[in-house]
Length: 221
Image (cartoon, rainbow, N blue to C red; front, side, top):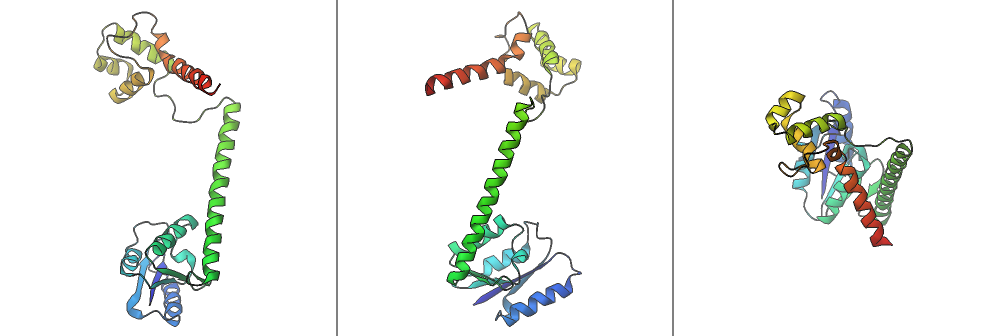
């Protein structure tokens, strides 16, 4: 048995929907087993697709007019078809002539999977190369520091002198959550911090990172 799925981006694409309907009916899909969506392919919440997948049972075949009617991207398409395969449901795309019930269709599907993996690998490689190039130029990624080193040194000095966190937040114009996160990052603890040079605490995170790197080098030596 065939279950048909159709999708158009807007309600105004009636001509495209009729084209899909005619092609699926000609392929042998029963009118009662047609499901449709009027949403963009990038949407995750497609009620028609959810109904079609819930209606499909092992041994049936989900058919679409074109591959882009089902998946919003190649990885998403592969994920959906793999999910169908795990449930014992076949997949057929009329335009691309992909049919997982045939050896040729199964091969084409695996070829698509290999291309998707190749694309992911290239993307990861480009990201790593970009980050490495940025580090060589002295640039680092990640979120910017919420409190700069100079202000943080003044904040720690005030806290060490007995100023409350609430008063520090008002004086320096920082949110309490930001203050707590910044203090946790450098390991400052009330009552245990040095009363001396407050600036030393602002470099605590750098020193701890260096110590971790040294210990890591000792283990690998």
